[in-house]
Length: 142
Image 1: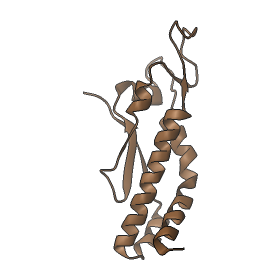
Image 2: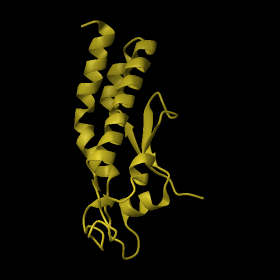
Image 3: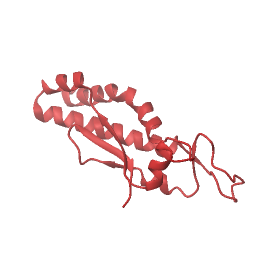
C-alpha cells in the first residue's frame, strides 16, 4: 500500500465568513474556482520549479543526489503530482501517492529532507487572496 502525500489549501476563516454572506451558489462557485486555480498553480510549481531536471545517475555525471534539492531522473514523480477535487467546496488536495514522494518531502533515516510540495505551497499561498478577488470580480461582472 502506498503512502499518500497531500497538501491541502484551505481558505482563511475571515475570508470564509465574508464569502458566506454572498449568495450560497455564488460563494461555492467562487471558492471552487479559486481553490482549483490555486491547486493547479501548486501542482505546476512543484513539478517545474521544485524538482530539478536531470539529476542523478551515471549518464548525467552525478552519482549522488543533490544535498538540498530534489532531482528528477525519469519524471515519474513530476507526473504523479495530481489535484484531487474530491474535498471541494472548502478544500482541495494536491499531492502524489508515490511512497518516495513522502520520503523526499519529509526525509527518512539518513536520507535528508528535500521538500518539493511545501515550497510550492509557500510560493502560491500569498496569491490566494488575489485569486479569490479575481473570481469574485468575474462573478460580479466587474
